[in-house]
Amino acid sequence: MTAPAPRRHLFAQTAVLVCTATAMALAGCASPTGSLPALAEMEAAPYQVAAGDKIHVAIQELQDASGDYVVEETGTISMPYVKTMPVAGLSYREIEQGIAGRLLSEGILVGQPVVNVRPIELRPFYVTGEVNRPGEFPYRHGMTVLAALSAAGGYTYRASTGKVSITRSVDGRDIIAKATEMTPIQPGDRIQVFERWF
Image (cartoon, rainbow, N blue to C red; front, side, top):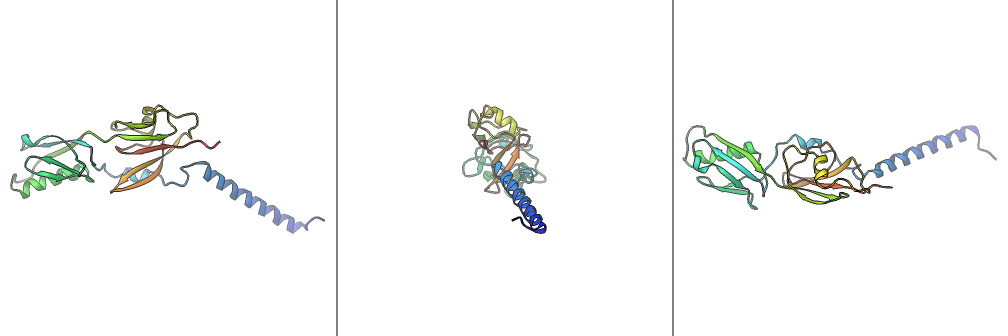
């Protein structure tokens, strides 16, 4: 015995809705990065210095204090006149302002000290997962995910290509987000390439 026409129509609509929902769920599951937020909102913030970075400090009025400094595990640098200076978590501009402020408060300089801070050698980045040579790699300014993957020997045949996850330290906490091959990376980023779902 067949169902009346209105009920058959209802069954058909229900079946379509169930199939659509199932397909959407499968599509979301098909990508390991599908549930992650995009990295774009983090890219606008200035780079924050961290332990292991090597920076150059130039003070126009104090040539003997100018030089290269490595950020220690304590998040500080040690230099003449200002002694121990906390710099971890600060942008280059903030470090410049901090050094200038210290020189003024200590009475070492007056007026408006000219301080310039620039990167020399930054923390390495890391690539894990489905790449041919996972590990730690030196960072170069302007690198993208694609450049990072190339340094790691490219995708394996099992890799899910095109999208990765990046774990980045922001304001002292780890943020995990999805990124494409064209996404710029930062020193210390941990890039993960996932296995393809066959």
